[in-house]
Image (cartoon, rainbow over all chains, first blue to last red; front, side, top):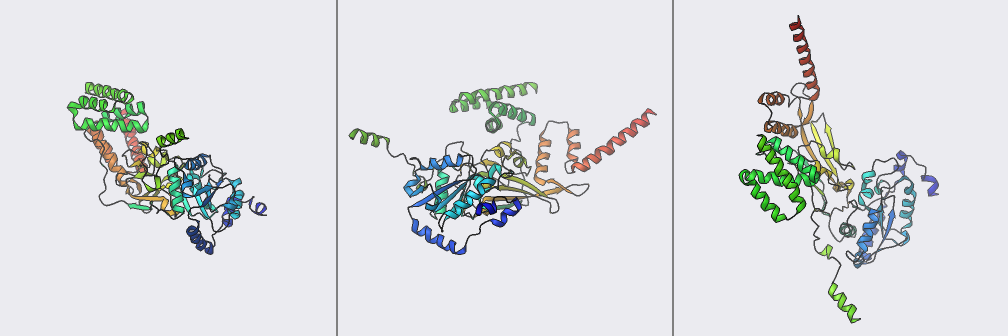
Length: 262
Length: 181
């Protein structure tokens, strides 16, 4: 019956069918948390994920992280479950199975949205074929963000949902102050030289590491422009990384070229 | 049996003591993007780069506010925001303990003031971004004339700049016509 009634919904209609938790179930949940102690049964509901989240959940079961030492066990039927873990961005066709799993699990139950997709739809949030997150029609107790969450983040998330650890992340709202100014990063270095160095460094090492290497070089250049080559050589000897030496050697060539032109 | 026990003792315990002791992350681990709101110039490069639209930028032209918003629930920790940030306001921290009970705690917001155009009075760009562009202009090796001319146009919106250019072109055309006569 459930299948017939909800399988052909439009996006606008589906929100009418979302489940709202019974207040009595909330009270039962507190009792559940007190009673289950060291035997938490988890059922995974894969609602159209890429399986990255599943791999991380199973990585959390391996000896290295071993969630079973806390009594957390993955079961293969929602009828045995205390915790339902929703992974994936909730594709249109997974809506009914997700609801069936929800209804099959005995009350009280804890629902967890796992991974970026489970929390909000993640990178797939605006696709035509996804609902965008488990919380669109299932009452979620805990959100575990991550793409995928590492096994350690998984353990932390379970600890939060079982009320063992406290939540760290808090919402924040910054409003621009009266005298907030941003100064240039390397004011002593001429603009053209800085751009040339940054470009060459990024060309060699990619955007992120290129920026970091150029920043290190520019800082050394600013500190002591006369002794920069000696300082750079000392730094490279300390790092002992041939790839870094290669890139920084290119930067020194660029620096020499600029000096020659000036 | 003894051999096995010896082996077990030699290997020791593999399980990490994580929730009871802090877990050290490897260098280069990409965790929660840490945003320094004071360093941010609200240029919106991160919002353009962000593949899952976890970062977004919205301008309220009536209030004169530019709002930067991060939704942690959508972040895929790719680090593109860190790559493109011109001032280094965003860095990916090693913080991985991000689970929350309340979805609202996954949001982070920062409001910046917009500057009004000196000609038409409409809001058009963040104050801090214009200041930063001015500082870059002053630092550049361009001739002084160019710097002064460009500096005078800093606080003018793109539409007024276009109008300015058109009137200049018209004047130039008139002058040329006069010279030709």
